Picture (cartoon, rainbow, N blue to C red):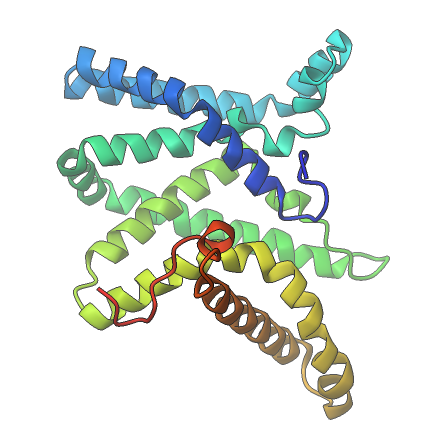
Length: 262
C-alpha cells in the first residue's frame, strides 16, 4: 500500500499523495514567484521549470546510477525502483496547473497564440508513439507489448503530454453545449473511482470475452473495444453506486448525483 506495487496503476496514487503532503511548500514557492515577478518574469520562471523538467526526464538513467552508487536507504529506491512514482518526475504538470490557475487570462492568450505549435506537436508525436506501439505487434517472438516505448518519464513524451493538455483545454473552451458540459463534468466526477477499480473490472470483462467473443469468431480489435467498453461501464456505474453510500465519498470522491446536477 505504501509503495503502490499492489497493482500496476497504483503508482499514480502514491505519486499524487506526495504532492498533497508537500502542497504547502509548493504553494509558498509559487506565491513567491507570483508576487515577486511581473508577467514576463513569471513566464521565464515557467520556461526554466520546463527546461529543468526535460533535463530530469532525459537523465533518468544517469540519476538512477548515481543514486545506486550513493546507496542511501529509502532515497536511493525513490530514484531507482520507485522512480516512476517520484513526484520530482511529474512536477511540471502541477507547475502548469498553477500557472493556468493564477493567470487565466494570460494562459488563454497563450493557448490561442501557440495553437499551431502545440497542435503540430500533438499530431506528430501522437502518430510517432502510435507507430512505436504498432511495432510491438511485429516482433519475431510474437506479440510482446512492454510499453517502454511510451514511458511517461522521457522528454518527447513530456512534450506530447503538455501538448495534449493544451489541445484538450482549447477544445473544452470551445464547448458551449450545456448538456455536453454536464456530461463531461459527471465523467470527471467518476474518473477517480473509475481509475481505482478499472484494473479489477478489466479482469471481469475478460470473462465474456473468453466465453462468447472467441467462440463467435469476432475480430480481435472488435473484442478489444467491447472489453474496454464493458470495463469502462462497470467502473463508472460502480463508482456512482459507491458514492451514493454515506461514507462512499471517502473512497471514490464526490460524484454528482446525475448528469443534470448543477
